[in-house]
Amino acid sequence: MPIEAISRTRKSASSTLDLPPPFRLVPLRETGDAFAHARTIAAEEGAGALIRVGRFDVVEFAVVLEPEEPLRLARRAFYAGVVALMNALAGSAPPQRPISLVWPDAIHIDGLLIGGARLAWPPQSDEEDAPERLVFGAMLRRVAMAERKMQQGEESSLSFAASLEDQGFEEPGSDRLVESFARHLMAIIDAWQANGFEIVAQNYLTYLMREKSAWPTIDGNGDLMLRWIGKEQPDRHSLAQALEQPTWLDPATGGPRG
Image 1 (spheres, helix red, strand yellow):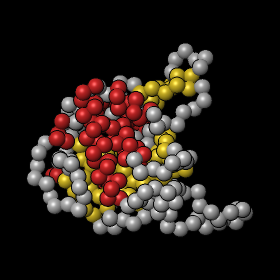
Image 2: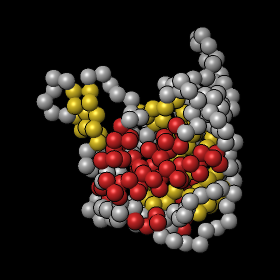
Image 3: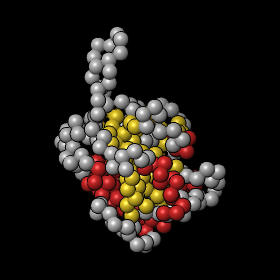
Image 4: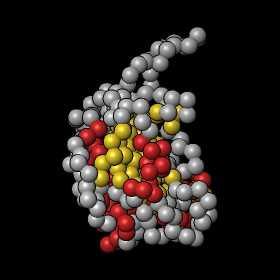
């Protein structure tokens, strides 16, 4: 099984969320950082710990995984997490609001950035050894808190940031979305176990924004391969390198870029 330890049984902590086994909620207050906290407690809590921040403006959570594959292959769990998140979003998306991805991590709704996902592994992990743990994290803008202030010379003060609320999502609160994510994650991991990684890659590619004249595939190690019309060899884009810095995250605010 690609992520064996996610199914290990532990006693579940009391939770306000209806999470499937083996997920266990670790709640944080509004000032917490789910991704950072998950990395801190991952060794103690182990696989299935789901850390959620109770913020009003964003849906923010992270989950601990314990893969059995070497790190160079285990990173593919990122795609499983993204597929689970996209499927959860699709379940509550209004009609005429397409949900899409910009490789590898940025989530768009109707062409507007709403957030994204990221993955971490222990420092100094060997590519040929199974990492002790992985942490998959996600953050989505739930409510646009304020408009971007107009700078001198600009014609409009309107923000280009999208939110679940202004895109018309049903129940844009974090509870139902996180519950749905957990169930979809178990489903895609089960499909991975039964049918191989290709089923995960195929699901991911259904959401991917595609460049004209390019045909994307996901290589066996998780790299993106772009095959261009008229070009013999495909372009390779390293997943490991791409995950080093989230493309959707604003370092200044700690939230999705506006």
